[in-house]
Image 1 (spheres, rainbow, N blue to C red):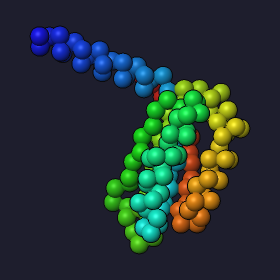
Image 2: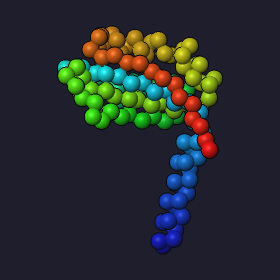
Image 3: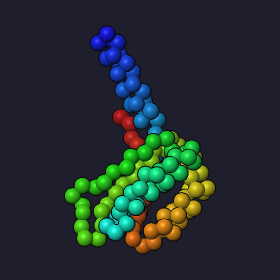
Image 4: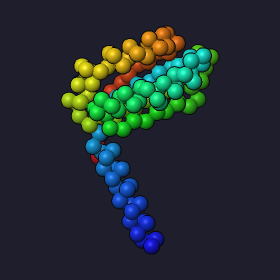
Length: 125
């Protein structure tokens, strides 16, 4: 019985690693969020923004993180990483979805947050 459970765990772990290795690009969006909108912004990111990004079908996974030891009077820093499996999918996102999704955030929260993004390419050894 223990061997069966261990084999199932090993298979799940292997699948997780293989899925991760399939992602070529990571869209890294870093945001500084004013304390006065922080809770509403976090709820919106989790309930609206991330689901919209995934609904494009161009991203397969995500990570939502808070930067540690980076709290100041102006606000907290957060990072969302969206995992994309090809340059083509990333370019499609930029052409077809990016502007609309970004404008929605500014319409809701104005200048109470600031974001910048970087795109990272995964390197496999």
